[in-house]
Image (cartoon, rainbow, N blue to C red; front, side, top):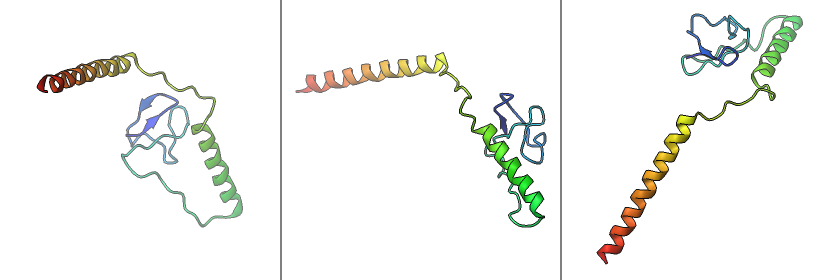
Amino acid sequence: MPWCTGCDRFLSPATVSPDGTCPKCGRAVDPGRAHAPAVEPAVGGDAAERRERRRARAERASRVDDPDEETLPVPWHLKLLVGAVALYLGYRAYEGIAWVVGRF
């Protein structure tokens, strides 16, 4: 399923622009596993077209790999789940050790 990080939403494959950008914000879209990303032809065209394709590709790459973009925080419910699992496994380990000590 294509995902636009700029709009923070899923897109249907039919709404993604032919060049692989979001129709709303113009950023490059992560294609996901819905289909293989479009591959530009390696040969053909004159030098100006190749330069323009190279410039557009570099611009899309710089928008996707923006180092100033903040990462999302870990959701509170995931932290709660990890804590509950840790408590449960700790309790089960305690019971297992107590059982082994009680058997000998």
